[in-house]
Image (cartoon, rainbow, N blue to C red):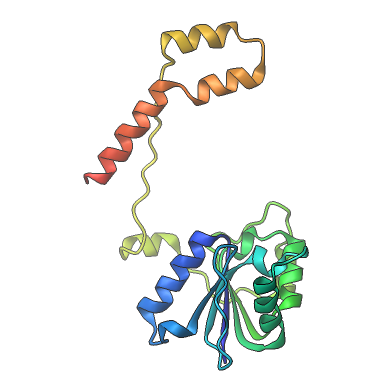
Length: 198
């Protein structure tokens, strides 16, 4: 059976496509991408379709090509619906996706099974219960995750920015001034360069 892999954005779609190419023996012409920029035609014999939640759940008018791909998705019975970052998908969108893709098996992946809307029980109902949970400390010890280091960097405002900040009566202007503080930008550039050279 074929697979639909859902990701949160187009960059993740391309990352998933690359991982399928890297770790499977699926021919490249059987790994399809369906994003706003790219709409591969799905082979009649199937394969792996990598797309976004938004592309599947979109309810508005579609281009002819997009509508044709969507029709092919809805007409097929898929073997697996693989859902990345399943905890971040809004509940209504999630229900539309589940309703649009007929699949024998649904598998949701997440690093943090926490939702801001407290609808984890919906995930249990729509996908099923949690099957596996890895301990992040074990993954770090085994070298799969980097050791976390938290550092606080204080960046004083430059004189001209501080003068404008203190004189500003508009909250939005104050926010722009502290966000765009040149000292922050210099510190960020330093940290990026530091980590690139490690």
